[in-house]
Amino acid sequence: MLTNWLYRLYGRLTAIPGFGPRFDRWARARRTAIYRLRDWAMRIDRPWQRQTGPAVQTAVEDLSMMIGALRQSCQHLHEELGRQRSMIESLSARLDAADPAALQQQWQQQLYQHSHAVNLKVDNAIEALMRRVERAERQLGQAQNTPLPQAPARILQPQRLAQLMQRPQGLWLEVGCGDKPDPDRLNIDLRALEGVDIVAPADCIPLADGCAARLRAAHLVEHFTATDFVERVLPEWRRLLAPGGTLELITPDLHAMAQAWLRGQLAEPDLVHVLYGGQDYPGDFHYHLYSPAALASLLQAHGMVEVVVIAAGRPNGLCLEFELHARKPTH
Image (cartoon, rainbow, N blue to C red):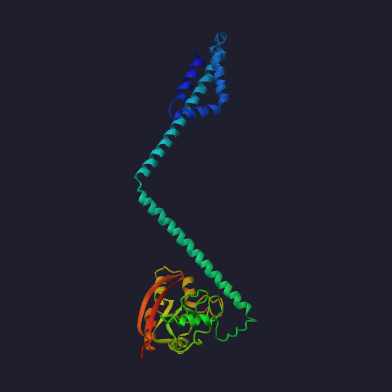
């Protein structure tokens, strides 16, 4: 009778939706104890076992303890099932209430922020690597800290110069192009890098007077002292420009950099790097920085007209830059 009762209890427990499979797995994992429980129940059910009072009493007590433990385990399983059901319902409600468009926008924003951070790290690493390469090139060309002799100015691509001068829009110059030559311009630099057309200093370029319709110098004017720029560099660039030709200058924005540093938006090492240059080789020092108003006033004082600030405080790598255009008078 007791054995049948236990089998019926097991069958009812395993038939409970959701709970039954869990209980069945739990019981199978403890099959040794379950078999002991079944054996005790079968001994109690045997007629000859009923006449041994102390043995029956002991078996009944053991059975009661095991049944109590079984009930406690069932209660724990039921509570755990309730918690998981609550979690599932809560998650389902959150998913139903969520706006797919808002979720997509949030994920895209997080992806953009992550990509932007990665790109900044990559750009900074590339910039640091390029500085090291240039420093190594300079060190290979030096002997016991002796300054490198300045190579004579020379035209490396005379055919390209002739082609560019025949264009209807006129000759466009890129002075101090470095390792970023412009395919639409005649590229000039002190170093014979790839893509450079003329090797020459910025204040002594072997071209005819008034040959250029446009002359651009990006991040170059800060490498000259204020005196050298006014007395040697700017007159040379005015000589090369045709009447009405355009001078295009891009340089760090001293005013925007100072404001960003005061607001805590620019780290001090980055400010110092832009103020004084990387200083990795002799040509990597900054001597003078300008605000847009200061450079515009200087150009006007030295004969340039129609001075226009195209952009100010524009981010470019570690610095904030400005771009300024001015024209050479037509008479």
